Image (cartoon, rainbow, N blue to C red; front, side, top):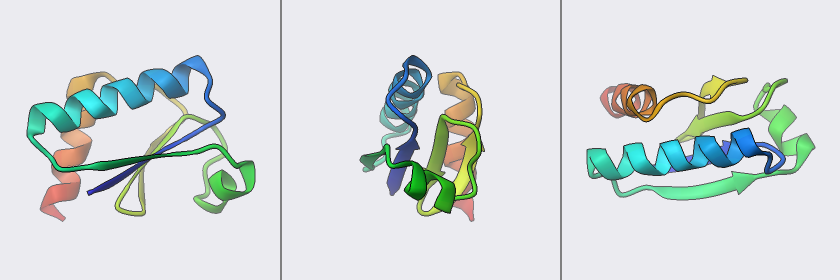
Length: 81
């Protein structure tokens, strides 16, 4: 699973990355994490508000910082698709 954190590196982006890493660990997923900080790349995903979470090239969240349990739900939903 490839997980991308989209954002400039602000506090919300850092918190989203922490939540995503914790969720992946709790689910026992083998995930590669990548930070995307280039605004042109971020805009290419159609995200206008950061932070954004992209799982296997699908945008699953943008503009807010979810809890670990919410990220677990998002990751689980992507596993089922």
